[in-house]
Length: 153
Image (cartoon, rainbow, N blue to C red):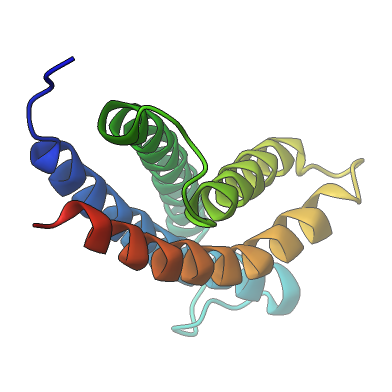
């Protein structure tokens, strides 16, 4: 089978990964805001306005949904691109790292939807997974860099 170059696919993946990391950073900041208000009653800038808090919470959910979408897009690109280029999967630890990140993101997103007054397990799980996700993103970025080197001429 004579397939076209997958370079355009890798460009989409690179942008998606960059935006995923940006979304993670924005989620960290907005999550810190929400945590600060919840624990101290004050926002990081010193004032608490109920409307602003609602806006920050909704913004946090929207950015989280965007990050989930980007990570799933990266999963599809990785599978399609690798199968198209190599005709098989599992050429490096990048597949395992990527799957771990996908699972962490999906469980974190699920736990976020469960955060409520009666479900005391959801918030600590969400925060813990997001701290672990920092290392997951670092791992998938490092392994991804070595994979990119295989595709570049």
